[in-house]
Length: 442
Ligand SMILES: Cc1cc2nc3c(=O)[nH]c(=O)nc-3n(C[C@H](O)[C@H](O)[C@H](O)COP(=O)(O)O)c2cc1C
Image (cartoon, rainbow, N blue to C red; front, side, top):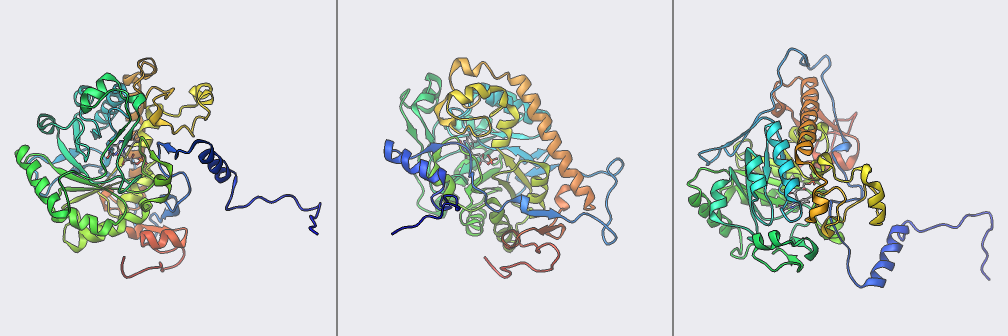
């Protein structure tokens, strides 16, 4: 005979929590997996788990109002004849036209240019909005080759060979039919209104030697002028960085699992790849082992939100960071002012991740002509410039407090970790100790 104590409230399972139960029911009802945009939603070790020590008796801080703290960064100093010079170490990550509207691309270009930094194209090619408004534009060379042509390679200021993305290392892109407008279809040379899946690997590669050949080919096409970046998803950062360097990259872009995407399977976003925090030190170690740290620059992305995140990524050895999701939020995505419309879509501002459906009330992740009108690219560009300025000031504030006259002089020695996991991943001591787990290799 079973007995239930009436004084004990019913207890739900932590394993089969409400979200999990709902997802099982959704899968059972529909027979299709969940596709969404954005990055990892569950909590993984991140920059929040690190703290700066700041100066005290043993360290000498800089005075904010009188003493300089530089933020400039030069990318592509290894081989390119025309390296890129940015005023700030924060760049705009590659986001495809198709995923984003033309006016969103224009807003990103305006904001980045005002702040003295670069934007990046994405799957689907280069738009005039973006080229026209981005003083410095990085052109992505992707496995899909959608929209790729030699003319645009030459119109770019740098080329980013995309091997992978943090949200889906090993996976390809998705663009659902509702976002394939006439213009998107024409640029990708594919039929209108039909779901597109981008390739997960380059068609002419079977290994790292082919990457070397490809980089040489791109250098020849662009007369050895443009820096060549290689972007990898955070999976095996030590070896991927070393192989990218061996293949001739000028810059390595490393995107951790919190990195956003316009669309992929939820199971991919949440279960494949490593946290951004865990990727940086192995990549820096690979550069150091090859004598290439600061010669081949490292750009880190995946969940960067504030100047504190920027400063921490730089202190761990990155030369710059890239932002995707935060830039979209800055220009107006998920803004509570559209709450009523988010509710109609069955979601709420702050949780809206159906960027693949093309119904974005903010007019950013859509190709719908009416929704697109809602985004004023001039105002949105100004908002992005403000946000980039604040992030830069925050980064400088922290660097000065640590006594650094350039943000690149931040170092692991300036950091401690709040948790053992973060201490192990970032290889900085647990706060209050001189110890971190996992010393001695990756
Ligand atoms: C809407 C959207 C579209 C994206 N499209 C591309 C793309 O075409 N190519 C690519 O390499 N990465 C793409 N990404 C990933 C970003 O380049 C970047 O790696 C990621 O957004 C960084 O993480 P964050 O969003 O947390 O800043 C996209 C991301 C978003 C949010």
